[in-house]
Length: 94
Image (cartoon, rainbow, N blue to C red; front, side, top):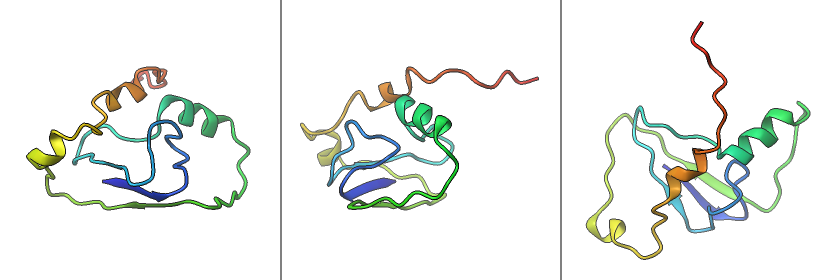
């Protein structure tokens, strides 16, 4: 799971607000949204300091589930998966 405590998360600048968390179980797609990927792909490869932000990540091989309460919250972002819809295919398998 990935969570944001304060500031802005650089891999998903839109829609990931402080206090928000995303849950990505083992072997499921995860990563930056399409604009974040494009921005990072064109960035100069040099050290960059991120100010005024604090995020966290927990990784586990064990499956995680939402509680009924969490699944039914009005603030749940049901369209979260759409952030990857505009990712361009860059692997051809050859």
